[in-house]
Length: 113
Image (cartoon, rainbow, N blue to C red; front, top):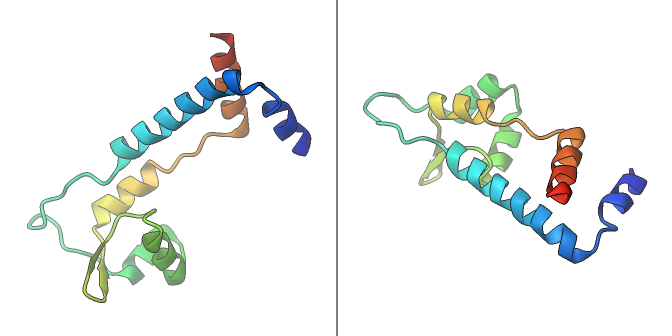
């Protein structure tokens, strides 16, 4: 793996910069597009952290950590955390990460331009 990283990052900065700019732009656009969609609180009841843990298959401590790092949609009111099922399901749906092969292909496509 170190060899792959070496090859990927042995490009001059002038050729790497557009790759990283495009990648950051893509990440930002995906993040803003996949941010939690607004809900009408009257349409949905909040669920607690235990329900989120069951829904995601993650430990309660992991949910606290994800919320602390703002990686999962949720709301804090005083000492309590609240979540909405529709937002958690949307968060799960939009959580696809690019594979190494997809990242390499994107980098090569950017270099070919």
